[in-house]
Image 1 (cartoon, rainbow, N blue to C red):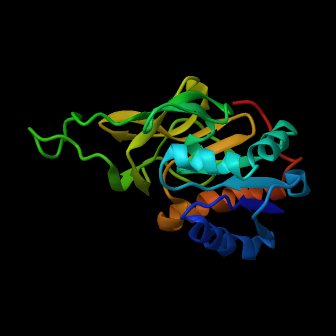
Image 2 (image 1 turned 120 degrees about the horizontal axis):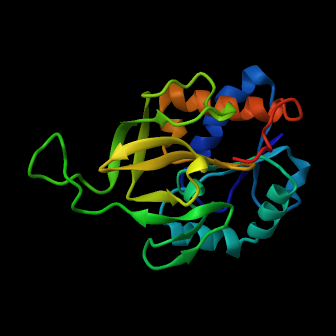
Image 3 (image 1 turned 60 degrees about the vertical axis):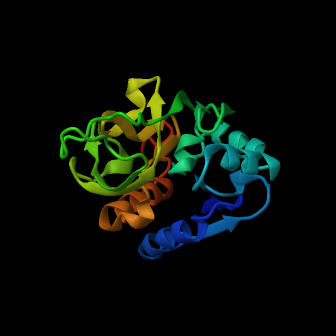
Length: 226
């Protein structure tokens, strides 16, 4: 039912194992797709990601996944981008030069400033990258965040953040020098910046919510507009 794209990213197996953990009780099969194919054979697709934006998007295109992915999303298929996979859903990124994204969520990926003051250590700047636990501040309700209370902690590891052009696409934000989108949705594309496979209970809950949405597709609003 759910396809996880294997286009050469480092966190594929850990994401797959996290999905397997929540798939069992729901009875939902999870497949790793290693080559371009008609993704509408599945009911949802997951785009994992780790490392630099440019390398990731280039790998995706070089291996021929871009067109099948966009075609599937165009039909209304739910898509979940994770970490750099979320960033690739946006229009562009400034990481190590300018790179074109998938244009599924309006906005750009930008680097955290090196001069953001650290409130816990006056006179010092926050470290970039952000590595560690931080809070998710829920901004609007969505099936992806069912039973995820505002203020829970998730695990982050990134130097670049998504700057969403559409405020209505922001489901949750996180404060790290600035208040930036950490979970987003635009139509049938969702993105989550923290690593759900490293975020323990809250990460598994979010993945479980995605799988439940897919299983219940047709009885909820998974293809609605943000």
